[in-house]
Length: 115
Length: 116
Image (spheres, rainbow over the protein chains, first blue to last red):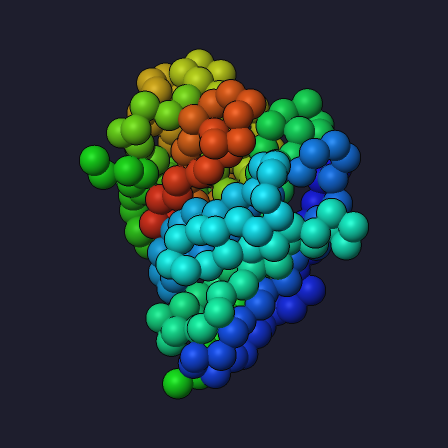
């Protein structure tokens, strides 16, 4: 089955510093990878996706993600963190195993941006 | 365009009670799904539907039923609530098909359920 792993439960970063939220994946075939963000007491919001092509994918709110096939990683990045970026971030992968199409989510990483 | 709506926002049930969580979307999405979110476990798929009249089980379907009589609505029924079903429930929808774009899901605001 396809899966993603988010090795960090929480990431703390100072406002204005670059941030990275890590994700590694395990898939057979070509990966479709996604990042979602969840603000407190809200549903998840789509940030960006990787299908094919350029390994650097740009998304909403100034976020980008770098796809690395050799390291099977899809890390989320932002050059300069804002306090308002504090939220829960989920990496996800398209999963076509088990006879149905679905998106499998990681366990989430809480990002705390410190003023 | 309201997107995905869920009711109620909060609910407290006693063990053994039944209830229905409502979900509706106005984007004409074929695919709808229900997830539960528990600390440290991410989102787990309960049931999903690829269109009206078609539903199937996800990872954690036990104790839940669904039906899809219209494209817009996808209610989730708890048959006999148990404390293990205390969770936050999210409904999501997306376009169907195999294109990557169709995997971008739209989520409702969630229902926080407590079973005592």
